[in-house]
Image (cartoon, rainbow over all chains, first blue to last red; front, top):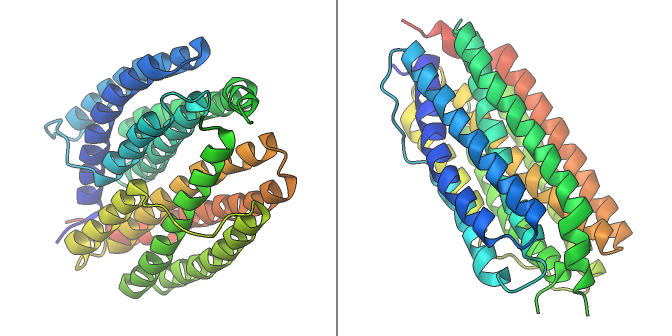
Length: 164
Length: 164
């Protein structure tokens, strides 16, 4: 019979797969972005992602499981929309606004998953794992706030100027 | 040249498609959930979704566009994971914990999209549309908080009890 412990371990594998995909996507987004500040935001998020993967490696060790991913159709779909944004708005001044929106969809997916994992880890008396996962959750929330600020200050006025 | 206005209208179509899919998925989740309180939470969210679609119809009218959806691979992927949860945990006491996690991934996707749409509507001086979209955004945040509470109070202790 599957239990909360199975849910927790499946959840770890889901987000482990997602983080690897996100790592790759953020490099592409940093390359594609037009504004320096957007490029920097995506590069910073990429560095954070490396640290978040390292924390997941530690959590897998804590629960005695091999660190490995499990296909996650959710992140595949979210990143596919980011790719469509690049294809459709690649030449547009609205590109950065679109890329930031795509990155925020990624952030929110991570917030949902890490939020759940923190709750489950606490429920399973895995306090140390809960703390590590919560560090990542707090980072994600902060990054999402920074992206909102960036969208309001830079990318959107830039995109609105292109109105005809 | 594509502009912020195009981004906004594409975003409306993306979430319009997503809401229709969510409407259907929430019915399935309400049917499948084991606990009465989970069933009620999913049913309530389903009713809210109907109101949110009605608000989107109004926003489409405000911007002079036909209300229609645009395929959204992100929500398709997120809901696919919910379906996998049903298949893998259908017989487990941890099912409700898993379904709530799936519903929170949906909530977060909606928060990301509505958050972006509110910002873009304001930037485009579509104040009335921004207000309507913000009503939905606030509903989503509240529902997410309620689901967190439900997970902590009911579904997870239920699932943890099944530990062997």
